Image (cartoon, rainbow, N blue to C red; front, side, top):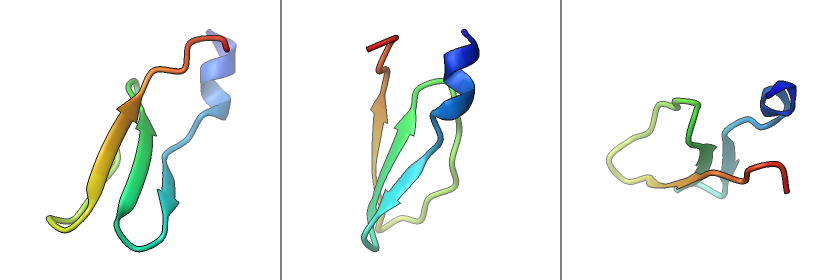
Length: 41
């Protein structure tokens, strides 16, 4: 599980946020949040 350290929330543009399922991120009401579980891929 050490590989999980390297996956952080990523903001793309003004409103799109991609976040691993094991992390939390602060978003605003206008943000679109996508939770991804990439596994070891």
